[in-house]
Image 1 (cartoon, rainbow, N blue to C red):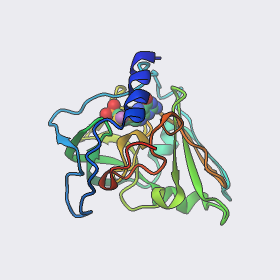
Image 2: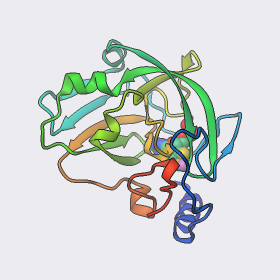
Image 3: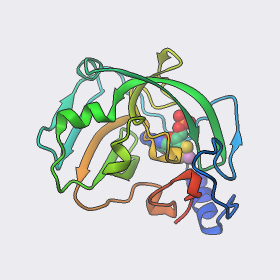
Length: 210
Ligand SMILES: Nc1nc2c(c(=O)[nH]1)N[C@H]1C(S)=C(S)[C@@H](COP(=O)(O)O)O[C@H]1N2
Ligand SMILES: [Mo]
């Protein structure tokens, strides 16, 4: 674990680093306080798990009617979607026009059928990372379980074989090396949400910190 980085990011949250104190029109493409980059930075806790096809498993469980335990082949056999969207990281960079391929969250929801009392979703990763969203933030047409970027398999550094993509929230919500999707009745704050980062994380409302 990169303890220095984790400490620095917790300090930024306490100090309100980078906050502009403004909100943007939701139709603005670049959220407040963000800077455009061309290359795609790599941000994680310092350990990039080597999730081979053999080691890969994706469990979907909790408050659902149909639980899933998928191998990589079974995951790849689900209906596939392509999308283009922008990335907005809380450390200030944004990257436009990423081409993604993967399984739409809505396709997964069709299969697992969350129970009416399921209000939240917790994402668990192979490196021990977690992130949480409300079910309506997951249930959006642009949310994808991604395995390809720009026509190539998603690299290990960017969370391959499979990561989450929630383009309308800060990128820390988009868990890399996805291992488990858990539907819950109550909220369970994730790794950064327990360390001073905002529970909701909308870049246009500049919901960086708690
Ligand atoms: N499993 C896991 N997912 C993670 C992280 C992590 O450390 N572990 N970091 C998050 C953060 S803070 C960001 S900004 C993005 C970075 O994704 P990237 O490295 O592909 O740019 O992944 C998010 N998902
Ligand atoms: Mo981040």
